[in-house]
Image 1 (cartoon, rainbow, N blue to C red):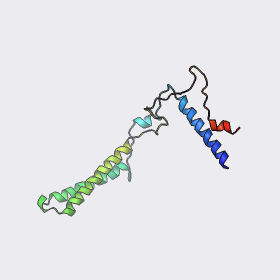
Image 2 (cartoon, one colour):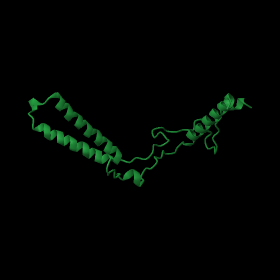
Image 3 (cartoon, helix red, strand yellow):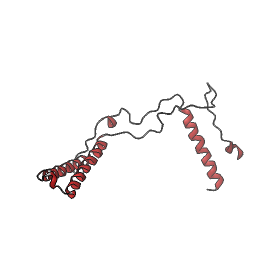
Length: 141
């Protein structure tokens, strides 16, 4: 593909994108999957090696460490033992966040920016067609 063909295709892509954006005037953005069962129902996420089983393993490990450390007086705890408990707690918290993300099913991201109000600036009011032009395309003729 030579340079002029590449430039032409780029201009056409820009025009198609611009036309798509302008066509959205006075339309409400739709979120893919909104209200469907797979975005409203929690996912199971159980079984060996899944998110919830990893959370249960991390909680069991944390409980085991806490049980062992409660037998030791707080003044006698070494830094290594404190770090071990802290790391186990961090792992539990990390697994909780991961399990929560896993259980919450969301649809794919939409193609519209929901906060933007789309306007076809320059379109003749009441016109059935929207003319989008590129000065570069007309120079090629």
